[in-house]
Length: 174
Image (cartoon, rainbow, N blue to C red; front, side, top):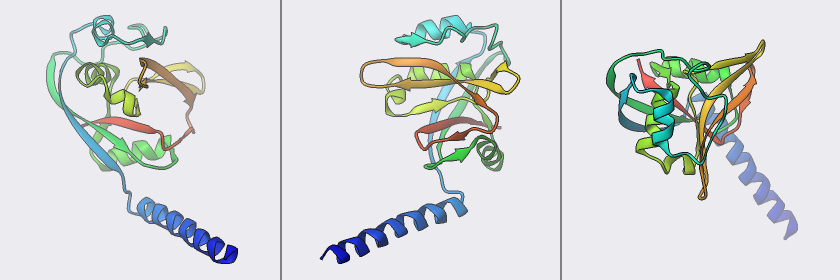
């Protein structure tokens, strides 16, 4: 009986790994789309205040994240989930294939303001705004939360970082 259980467990594990490999080869990912109106004239501080976060990383400021765009615009923010460990460079390549640019911090803040409970479900990264903290380390804004709090924080890491399957990445159609 133990041999049969071990064989069945081994077969199930093999099937799971093969499924993941097949999805990887087919560039499989999950996507959620959110329609937003972004006012790029609104200050970063006002956006953060309006977001009513429980905690904000102290290095998220206009000095580290200056205005890149002006005006008001209706955009679709696409949240992409790769479902497995993925390298930063691969995320950028996949965004190119999908004709997406990485979302910026002001777009991330509007997403969190309009859908405040979204970040309680999963962590969301915006690669479109990066603060170069040191020679080999970028800091990206991220939304994190749980049932008790909502946070706007920074993920600071090297250029060759591998992301776990816990993250979703925000992009905007070009």
